[in-house]
Length: 209
Image (cartoon, rainbow, N blue to C red; front, side, top):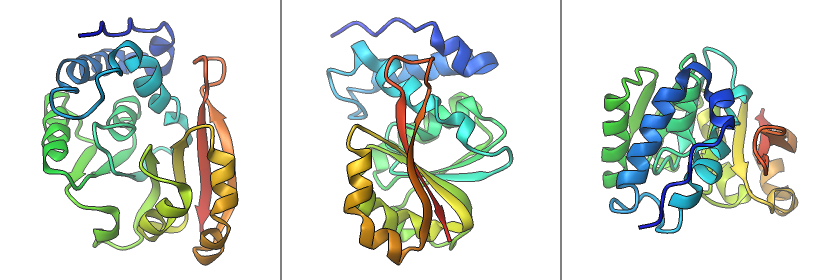
């Protein structure tokens, strides 16, 4: 087994007084992630930088007191990481696969994350209507595919906040029809974590009207 990446010094800056919780979750993911099909076998040497901090740097983008959905939460990236970093925000982790729901539920209980609800469902099966202040997702699918699955969950004036890779700008261009259909405004890509992590996270943001 590859060694787990040492904790970067930026973790203390990003998580502040929540660092111990972040360490505990990261250790659990390193220990159980591959065996439980949550992360691939090559991820341990870059677990902190590629996954934990890549997710956590988006934490300042959400307003205090908001209720935010994470569609396709999987291993808890970004939802659980963001819930650790932002205990003042309510998080709804939406995940259809039973084994991943079991993992998320265990971690919520073990780390006493009383600001988290785990819902076993696909985004398109959401029954509560457009009630969320924002929806996030990471490494789920292309923007034009994500919008129909996530925009209906968000209230008028709420936001889509997707963590993306190098193709983020091209994904906006490819989603022109969907952007119009769902009346998205202020669609843009912004960096998160500049000056904190080597490669800032690309965040694709849009307001739902």
